[in-house]
Image 1 (cartoon, rainbow, N blue to C red):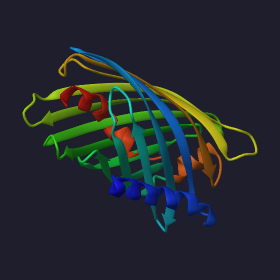
Image 2: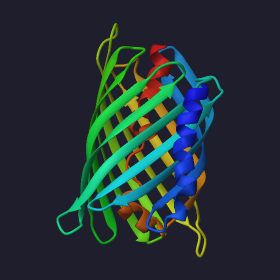
Image 3: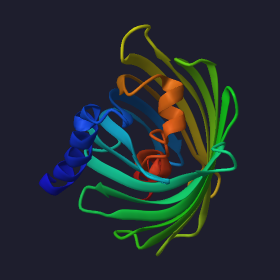
Amino acid sequence: MKTQLFAAAAVLAVAVSAPAFAQNVGSIGAAVNYSDIKATGLDADGTSVKVDGNVAIPTGAWTVTLNGNVSVNDNDLSDETVASTAAHATTLVAGDTVRVGGFAALSRPSSDTLWAVGAEASKYFDRVTLTGVAAYGHENDADADLYTVRGEARYFVSDDFRLDAGAGYANLDPKGFSKADVWDVNVGGEYKFANTGWSTFGKYTHTESKDLADLNSEAVKVGFRYTFGGSLKTRDRSGADLIDAETLFGVRAPVRTIVQ
């Protein structure tokens, strides 16, 4: 547990100290997440608390993005403390309107380890950002392979008001269990208050799988965030808002509740 907290805290410390470097953009935030999971023989809900941070560090033609979070769960669904982190290397092409690259992600729920590697791309329009991710991962405890693709559209009503919609698909192949297809969709948004670095955000996610005990999960997350280095749109275009490990592995939260 101490190792998990230390790893995520190190990434958050980078984000907190980043304002000392004027060219860096990123944020730190805190949120409460409520989940309601229904499946064959299961009807449970629970609340967790999460802190996170991200920072984009330009290094010539490439940008290094670091993000990490710690989620504390103590409810009917889980009593785990989960630390997650990801590192990205991306570059701008096509007249700086497309960001492409790859990443590695790691998550440590309880004594387990989940890791993944993947490719990602973002297309920037005037007020819209389109993102896509494809990744392969492995969960050591369940000896499970994970394949996932995700996409998201972000619409900037203004530079400091963003609306989001996304969808994801994952194929899970755990040893001793049948393969399962899991789908999720989400909507959300973030609003940054004028003349401050502070914003508030919310997100709703629906997850389901007919293959896995007729799983049906609803989750709502709300919180506050402090952005350094510019507006929400600046943060997005800098590469600071690339996918984090929690989003990539998010499908595993309801799945772990079923298979454990």
